[in-house]
Image 1: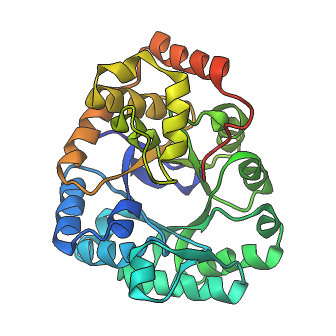
Image 2 (image 1 turned 180 degrees about the horizontal axis):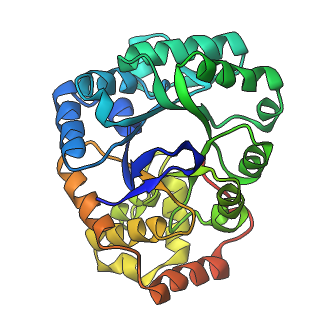
Length: 308
């Protein structure tokens, strides 16, 4: 497993991390989450990223790593609190709420769910630009850091709002979409983040593996935009098979300048070893990487902005 330093935080993180949205939204059984995360940690993955709005994801992860907290770099997000009923949580329903008192309570709930007294990075979860400009809201994260509830603060965000977040100087890390189907940030955000010493965490680094649906469009809003884009991009490597495509996609993202770690979600323990193997193959040959970039430049319209 390769490790990199997460910008000015100094945290040593695995290049492949674990994203917790799927285990929460898909109501994965606790024993399966236990197996996934213990397999990941045993293999050297030390980055775990989640959010309070991922249904019961925080609680599942908190229980799974309760005896191994010191071995991981734990990150969560606030700003989209889950709705109250069990059925609503299981469906992943959430509502944006940037009221400072709510955010403070959200952080406290997250720590309880995760069975820890602190997270390594607390992140805003896709805030609107007006929120980023609200000093009262930013102060919530600063106070969380001062109280020891979080070691560092970050923001999960995309497109022009991400540029503002980087240039604001308020955050230690940025979480952003970068993939074969989401390349806007490579030119517009990553160079600015690197120049400021920020750690860059990539979400959806394999574009939700949208190609696995073949010619049949996925029914969910989360994957469909990437499926549509990939149909138009029509990369040659997508014709090699599902696993070959996954390998190229992950190697593309991890080989992009400025990327520190890429968080990949899964509900299947065997995927952990596969993701590590793909990443272990190293960056794509420069010619293959540049061919993917060139295809994007030739095909992508201006409205193919970062997917939140």
